[in-house]
Image (cartoon, rainbow, N blue to C red; front, side, top):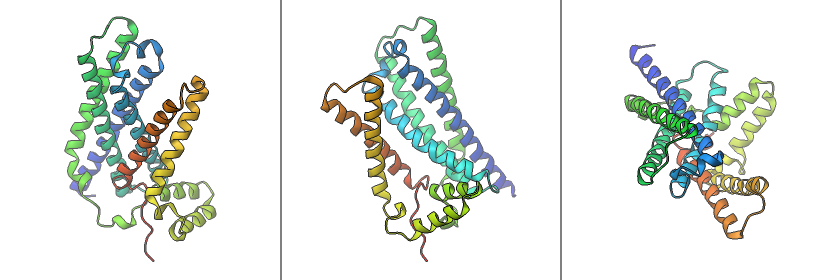
Length: 261
C-alpha cells in the first residue's frame, strides 16, 4: 500500500466513523424529542415546518443506513474492498450533510421561538443537541478533507457490486450459495429484474412504505381522524422514501444496471 493509498483509506475511515457518530446522536435526539410527549410539547422544532425537515432527514438516514449496513456486513466477510469502502464513506458523508441541515433547522426554530430551558429533561436534550452539533462539525471537517478521495470514481467501477450483490454475497457466505447464484442470474437476465426497473423500484417502495406507515400509525394511535389526514401522511412518507432512494441511487450504487454479456 502506497502512502497516498494509505492516506485515502484513513480519510474514508474518518468520514465513515465520524459520520456514523453524528448520525447516531441525531437519531437519539430525534427519538427523544418526538416520542417523549412532555419534551415534544415544549420544543418548537417538533412542529411544522421544522418537524417535516426532521421527518425527511430520518427517512433519508434510514435508507442510507440500511444500504451501508448491508455493505459493511458483506465487506467483513471478504478482503478489504476499496470500492465498497468508498461507497460506505459516501453514504456517511451524505448522512452528515443531512444531519447538518436538520440540526441547523432545529437551531433556527429554537432561536425563532421562546423556549423554557429549565428542568432536567430539557437539560438532557440541550446537552445531546450540543453534542450532536459538535460531532456534526467534526464530521463535516472530515468530509472536506476527504472530498478528493470521495469524488474520484474508480477505474473498474463497472465491476463494483451494488447492494443486491452484497445481499447475495451475504446469503452465499451463510450457506445459501445455490439460492444466491440463482437469484443473481435472475436479476441479470430477467425482464422483471429490479435492475431493469430502477425507477419503478422507487415508486413501489415508496407506496409500500406509505401504506405501512399509515397502518402502523392507526395501530398505535387509533383510527385516523379523516381520509385527508391519512392521505397526506401516507403521501409524505411515500415521497420521502422514494426521494431518498432516487437521490442515493447513483451515489451509493443501490441498484446497478444489468451487466452486458
